[in-house]
Image 1 (tube, each protein chain N blue to C red):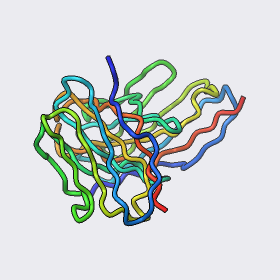
Image 2: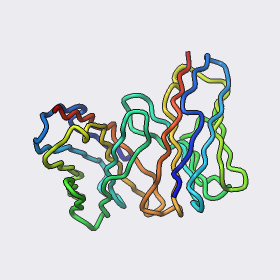
Image 3: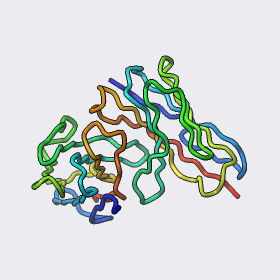
Image 4: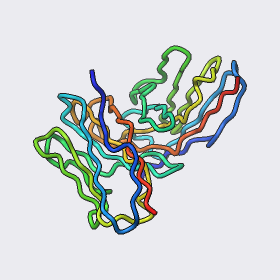
Length: 113
Length: 114
């Protein structure tokens, strides 16, 4: 059974810092991995999606990497801003293209001005 | 393009009462998902529809939860009777086809059972 773990559970940093969020999964047979952002009282917004054949994806100040063999992914946020404060969720899809998303518990990020 | 709509946004009920949530997916999206997100946890899939048929309901507590997607568009999720442990955010998501890369999430319904 696939399990997804995110470390740390919470993180508080001053504005401008670069930071790394970690995600690990137990079954390396994944189809893809996604990073989501969740703001209080709102749904999930997809940030980056990495296919199993890819090693990383970048969007603006965000960079996500995937090491499928070791069951790890990282989300790197450069030059953090107070607007980055949110909960970041990692999810893996297994079982082929029609498999379900299995989510981690998330990392709650607070960026202080 | 309008996003996934859900209502109500908040609901407070007493245990043993019943409650229903409504979801309107993005126009043209054939696949619809209901997730349960307990505080401090990641979302957990309850049920997945392809048009008006159920694809996966293996994690739906069928003794108290039911869901339908008549006409393959809107969907309702019902809980009857509710328990304290059902307190959670219920998220609806949709995707163009079952294997689509992206699922688009609605804002969720926060349920509190007292």
